Length: 259
Length: 160
Picture (cartoon, rainbow over the protein chains, first blue to last red):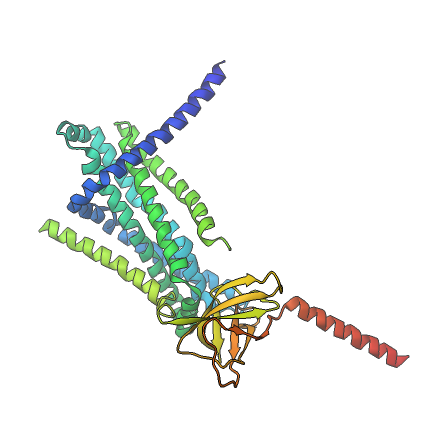
């Protein structure tokens, strides 16, 4: 009967971690109003999460725009449709690559630092010290970081798309020699602000919430040892990346399904 | 001082995000064209709408004057009922005709309106009566094959 008990223990552990993370999320939501009242904390966290991720996001966006334009050109030129290069790059960036790649980079750049920071706070018993001083660590430590992540992520994603489209412009107009007027006008007739850009922004907001919440949860429940923090940091990247990719499929199916 | 400079940097960050959003929305998407301005509705019935989609442009003389807002099937006549929104500065005579055309050989389909000569103009809610359906490539090829077969038959007949 040992194997039966093993299955039971496995299921209970799994359900328990789901329940704990859901309860953690509810607590986090309840702590948000307190963080909004002290917005200075949120601002300094946006600096830590958003501003410091700026360079890697802009560099990656530029690179993706360059490469996408070059690759798409060879495929499109075969069909004599090289003029619509801008449209293809724009749609793939705004709908998919902008939110998703930014979220993956965000999980690697900002999510890990959040997990490690909170994990070390816990290891150094700073969280316990806050509780002793009757300060709710969720309001003082977690909620400002959560808000900062949820605000920064859509901004980073739209910057990624914007710089990617500019990069595609450099390649398409500068290198390949596509007419700049056509480059923009085909995009303007093919990209809808609400359907494409708006849904991309909604996606990136959802991804920001997922990545930040996962990072905070992993940091908060980590074992307060060096190995525990290392393990939690790894789990942050793995879980956020997988949930972003899974969520992306669901959101895409909901948003862009053919009517 | 340190706090001030952090606030400035965050302000810069937020501004950059908004600038990127404006850039994408205005320069690389269609917010600048066709969002504001009054429009009026027309309908057109087609025997076959081909691959026409909602939000496809309506053009007259190649100039975009409106958009397709909905496509339905009339359950009685089995015709496709296409609703159009035309910008209100543009009015067409009552005997104007609507065609479903294709941009390029394989491009997107759009509705072209050829103005007629009637003295009265369409008003909101009118139905465009003279329409020409989309050209379906399969039908076209079928017709071509038939006429080729017909020619071949005639030639054989002449020889005999």
